[in-house]
Image 1 (cartoon, rainbow, N blue to C red):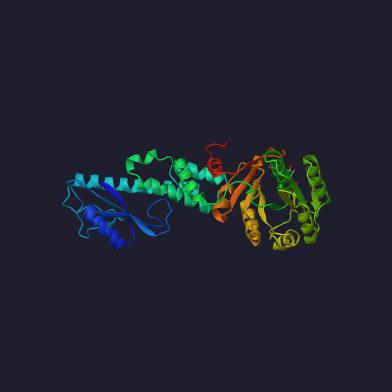
Image 2 (spheres, rainbow, N blue to C red):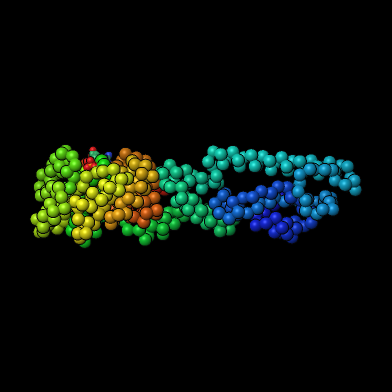
Length: 381
Ligand SMILES: Nc1nc2c(ncn2[C@@H]2O[C@H](COP(=O)(O)OP(=O)(O)OP(=O)(O)O)[C@@H](O)[C@H]2O)c(=O)[nH]1
Ligand SMILES: [Mg+2]
């Protein structure tokens, strides 16, 4: 018994191909509408999946209707010998049972969320665990499956899915700017929600500019919302021995900027607010002069939910955000945002911070690091 699966746009088209390949004796065992060309639900196009069978043996089932559905398995016409008739019936019933079993297995796999064959499933699990968004996961698996199907069948098992996706991501991320300070803008604004590590990151960057680059650095804070916030940045300014000005208004801000005319870089701290509310962004723009020769970094914590980061990034589109700084990598195993933000918002990652220590716990983000971290190949740069 030869069994073959066909995918076609319409039933007449499927019948034509079945007749052409299996002949007029073929029977249709099963047909259903599927979303894809048979590649595990990934391609959007609706198609018909038709399973047809034919017995290539000498005693073929002769039915006047030619291609027929298999539904009722009736005994073959009397011309076939009883022993042969029994054998054929047995074979047909075995086949029906086999197909039924396969369908049940497929359903069970899908209900457990296992929709892909190995090693695709392993990569899908890894990406999901990292919190890579569904859209990106689909895009990646679609690419990997396409590569797999385009290879000659004998070479498919040799496809290294992780490596292939690494190459693909490198290509996809090529247009997004990664890496730290440009050093071309004097003013560096650091903005973001409450408690993500803005002030700590400013201290790390100031120390880096001062100690590693031997630059003249000054600080301005516009975070007058909490008394403790001023004390915190004052402490860092004192330790690093750099000047700090507190700006309560846009006039204070302009005064501080002229006061620091001789400095190479001015790092500007701001109050963390619930920036899901756009009013706070407008308020921020009233104290900081974003028109200045400035580059602005949005700080987000990797411990936050991606849906919330998403909303905040959207709200900040009112301002010119150069890149994102992601903090608290040490507190989470989910690094999906490293991929979600560049691919879904076109915003590069400038730095990743991984601890409370000033100035050490910060590193510049690079595309290879992001890929390796998210695909789980290697945790080190
Ligand atoms: N584990 C960990 N903690 C961090 C990191 N960066 C900052 N923190 C801690 O996060 C807490 C908040 O840091 P801040 O720098 O005050 O955060 P902020 O964004 O300025 O906070 P607000 O000004 O109140 O909005 C502090 O306890 C920091 O030590 C990091 O990379 N990893
Ligand atoms: Mg702060």
